[in-house]
Image (cartoon, rainbow, N blue to C red; front, side, top):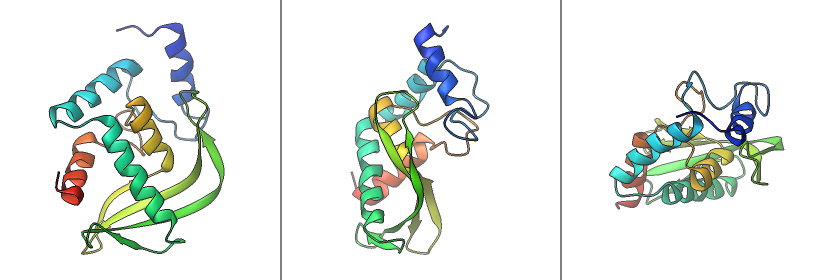
Length: 156
């Protein structure tokens, strides 16, 4: 599917150097709509919505923020979360008017193994735009991995 001019503006904002050094697409050359459709298909096959997964990430983020850069246990100790903050905000590349503070949230299991690393912007991109980032992007969240974590934590 060919991108329309409005999608090209978004693609330009997702490329390296516009809003982030590494960008949001990795080596994924597919149209943005195709990237979103493929990932949304994975989520819907699991009988979930991108909004549910984005809200789950946001809950992890808010809890981690409350820990003041310390580990915070969640879900009866199944996981712990930590937020490491940096100064500043980053605007949504979809130009929806949202800006997120810059932070890295780390989710670990009870054994201390990293399960997921994400940013507050990722929670917004998934929940609002259904965008998990392009294949090869260093900050891409694989939908199947996020679904697995969601089920592990919530039991749903």
